[in-house]
Amino acid sequence: MILGRRDPSLSELGREQAARLAAAAVRVGVTAIWTSPLRRARETAAIVAAAAGVQERVLDELRESDRGDWEGQTVGHIAVAQPDLFAAFEAADAQFAFPGGESLADQVRRTREALGIVAAGPAPALVVAHAGTIRAAMLALGQRPPPERELPHGEFVVVIWSPAGAPVVGTESR
Image (cartoon, rainbow, N blue to C red):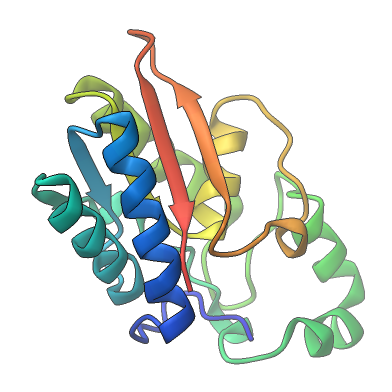
């Protein structure tokens, strides 16, 4: 199901994934944790922050895309009901916008702003966000993202090198 800006808590699986992420964050010595304001991301960040002894910081620009009319629908239904639009979404087409929601271009712009804030802060930093935000970050950095369905949700970690050479790590939890 497409969550978008829906705001459920982490599932038990999500809490387990967050605990594994916390262990990894401690190993690399994360000194800053930035998170989307959505509950599932904030809960993940809080678990990691407690383990790492770091205070998480909410960054509104990291929130998931507003998926408009698609929120609450299954990917399978959308792929059949709106195949051309779904193909544009999967391809991260620069002209794509969610029906009744946000455009990809708008999400890339705000994600680029978030990356600038994170890169200017302490490092190494952990960014807890969402699949759409991860794809937008890849586009902002000139990388072609995979279709969202190919992201291993909850286990996906991206290492982005900031201008200063410090790693910025992102994940998406369920």
